[in-house]
Image 1 (cartoon, rainbow, N blue to C red):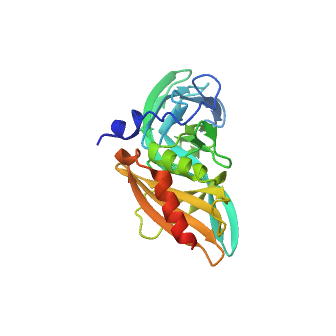
Image 2: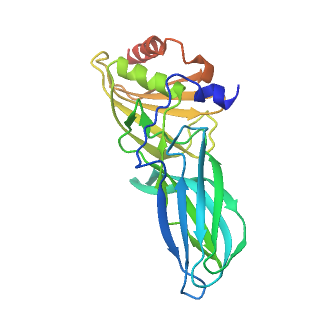
Image 3: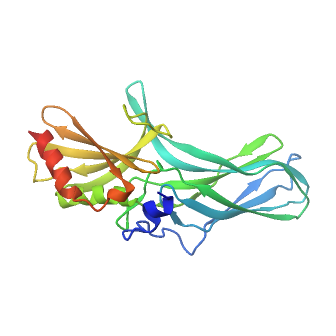
Length: 273
């Protein structure tokens, strides 16, 4: 099944809404020349303000030469999101880059010259989503960061935000949770690996739901997706009075038309007893 058949033609999308003004995002950054003066300017424009996991982000990196010529070693891009880490019983957050790509190798940048470098970069299937049902997920942000290497120095400071919308397989699960009375609270991304599930990125997103009056023996539920080309692994971490319980199941991209509200109700009711 092609990626386009998996999600691009589904009636439920696009899930993302444009969180940006206009159709591009532009960030300028000043790069010091090797001599310390006359640095180049680099502008990154995203022509794709929103994307879904497995999709493609298009844009252009525009490089303008300064008052002195420079040797550009590499221009790259990567996605960035905030990840929670645990260390000696303490938690902290840190921006983490993932899926880095080189969009141009070494080249000479003459004084005042302008180079446009078009790009198309793939958003990994496990990219955290930031939008669901037309609304921003509280706590979530993903951006595209430009990396420029000049004379051995690396500048990776500026990032352009991008909306990442839910895939249909993610949408049906999140919608089912809401239909069962759970209230979407917030989302975050945690460093680590989920036992028994193959992952690519080494971190995973948790989407938190407050308790539902329908299930008196259950507190909050955290939903995690590990999406891939064929479908998505789904893990529900259920807060129970006698300890956490875990539910896992798989949804194929072609299986989103099933009655997932009834199926998830059956699973949660079973684990709650």
